[in-house]
Amino acid sequence: MNISIIIPIYNREELINTCFESLLKFSNAISYEVVFVNDGSTDDSLNKAQILADQYSFVTCINQENQGAAGARNTGMKHAKGEYFCFLDTDDWLNIDVIEELFHFGKKNNFDLVSYKMETFDENYKSTGIVKSHPILYNELMSGKDALIQGYQPSSACVFLYKKDFIFHNNLSFFVGITQEDVEFTARLLLVAKKVFFSSKIAYNYYKHSGSVSTPITKEKKEKYLLDAIKVAVLIKEQGLLCYNKDIRTFEAIQKNYNSVVWNLLLRFITNPKEVDFDFKMTCLEGLKKEGLYPIKGKLKTNFQKLSAFFFNIEFVLNIFFKI
Image (cartoon, rainbow, N blue to C red; front, side):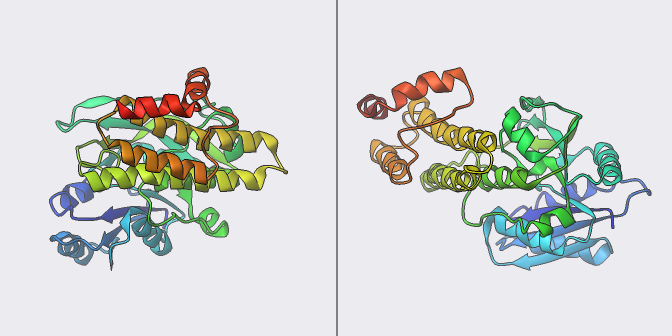
């Protein structure tokens, strides 16, 4: 088996068939499987996915109690049979020809990871552009640590082809229970990857809609998403501390990333003053203090971050912004 495509499902009955049909474009030169992981859906998603599994020998449907996207992906990885695998959300789609090309290239060169670019689309399926490039050398072999040192910003886990043996040899899995698991996972992933190739080709198409995990619409979901940023920063910091005495450049690269998570959280409170109330902002600030993440200390990614962090670190100034 060449490629496994892992698709977590949660209450997406109306999208499953369209998502699946978009995957029927692989050439005969590729053997592939589709692994649906139904994550405790309460609609007809499980039945829709099971019908496809009954009809097609290359489709597997796994059912589990709700664990969130991280738990569903972990289950999918355990069941994947392909030499390489990738993740696909039900409302997104892949450029299959690019995936095929990068798989062959990755297998030939025994890459741990092959990354590709993402294009975003609005609710009318109109392109809103290609996700901004990272400040790294594209189309060249490097280690994951080199990518972090160059300035790679850990983000979506959907923009990689993963060599299965590499993932399991390093015992890599997603942290369950947080909403920003991709950021933490990709940081940890790159710390151990020896052979990584970042392609400049677009292979993932991301459909952005209101109510997604990154743009939650309820108060409870918003607050969880923002609190989870603290947990993500803590987890990335823990990985960085493991590098401190061994590789100072890698530690500083990781430090830039966890400090950026904190900086982005504080900036969000300031630029979206009505999103959450003052008490919640102060709860987050106390949480950052408890974890040694505030005041922001050490490296940041940009001069603007460095300048603004100077004012963020003056707590009474920050409190004034929080009260606006």
